[in-house]
Image (cartoon, rainbow, N blue to C red; front, side, top):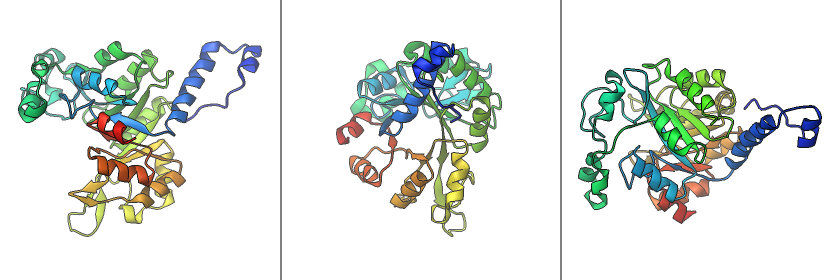
Length: 307
């Protein structure tokens, strides 16, 4: 974070510095300070209780005391930032095809809620039917800086303009200055682009560890780091050059891919650790014991019960 050292308020005023600049620095520093405490990150909203990335999921996440709402972003054919996880429509809407092939008006006409009722009849609600896909602008218009956003850039290679559009939106809405946003991605290039556009935005590098194709140990999906057993301080420092944290998966098909030592080493290199996606309370307790700094969950209520 390229925040300049702050002068005391009285000294700032004596030097003729505007009060909003002090307030901006305070907000950004406050966010970084609070990130040292444990963060409950609502994965796609309270997506265990309601259709992901819909108003019911976000409203329930807020009611359950989540610290951050997680949003995944793709771009529509007409350049709008749409909140949806998959790059295709089939899983969470009644549409078919790629998100990027449809204009926003076409995406808005889709039913993004009924699938949840069919998939989770024990948590079904008639009010979820016909829920709309949302845009980033709509979410910000509704919540402003009353909430904090944990935004993931999806498929940035397909949308090279996504990074600039996202940063410009956050700046125009004052969310960076308000200390109300974190951006995450599996794409190191995406995060580096964002860092160049605005170095004040806290960034988190996502990683995914799974077995190598030849069965010889683990590999990281995009090659950002070596296998956990081979990571050294230099690997973590390379991430710390642009990010404040790392977001790993913890297991792959039931087997651990990281351990408490991974968390300790990340901390030693000034990186927060926010693992995903943790829905079992025993697993939550185990990771809290490892010293993680927060976690993504579909069930913010379960995590707050543990905390």
